[in-house]
Every structure is written in structure tokens, then in C-alpha cells.
Amino acid sequence: MPPGEYSEHPPGSMCEGENWTVSVLNAVMQGPDWNSTVVFVTWDDFGGFYDHVAPPQVDQFGLGPRVPLLIISPYAKAGYVSHTVYDHTSVLKFIETRYGFQPLASRDAAASNMLDSFDFEQPPQAPLLLQPHACP
Image (cartoon, rainbow, N blue to C red):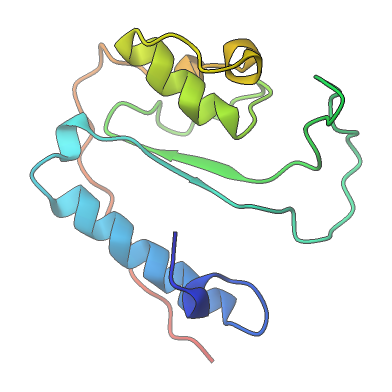
């Protein structure tokens, strides 16, 4: 989670926030553990924009409006767009499934495990280093 000034929330700069994220991702990809890493980049809210898709009602709270999710890993399927419904507990479900842990609650037990976005049989992909943008 970025420091406040890089959170992309007003009055902060979305550009500076993106550059902070790029710097962290580049460091991870250049680090010694890249071949055993997955990074899930998501946001805590939808930005207030209209969404033509109603949120699924999985319980009394529902899932809320959709937010982006980027999966960055040497084992992520290249160019893949998943149409599976994920929620924030899907990250926990992925960890539980991958390492054989029991669910902590009914919400993560019912979540999608995101394994459709990975190919653990493929050779690890090389890092894709990104360049920061010049911000206004």
C-alpha cells in the first residue's frame, strides 16, 4: 500500500501514484525471488464512475462496484483476461488453495481462487520492466 501522497486519492497525483507502483513492481521483478512471486494490484474503490454491471449479491453485503485487478507473475498467463468474478477475498482464497490452507471464513471459502489466470507448467516469464511517466 503506497504512502498517502502516492495513493492516487485526491488531492494526490494519479501519475505520481502510478510511478510509485511502477518503481515497486520493477524492484520486485529485478529481485532474486521473481521466479516464485505473484503480485496482485487492485484498488480499494471504483472511483465513482458508472458501471453497467450490477454487483453480484453473494451475501447480505454484496460485492460492490467492480475494481481493476492486475496479476503480475512469471506464471501469469500472458495477455489473459479473466471473466471470472473475483473479490478481494479471492487473494486470500488463492493463497489458501495454492498452499493447502483451510479457509478462514465462509466468504473466502466461497471466493474464486484465481487459478484460471496462471499456468504453473510454463517456463517462468522474464520481467517486463516499466518506465515511469513524466507527471504534470
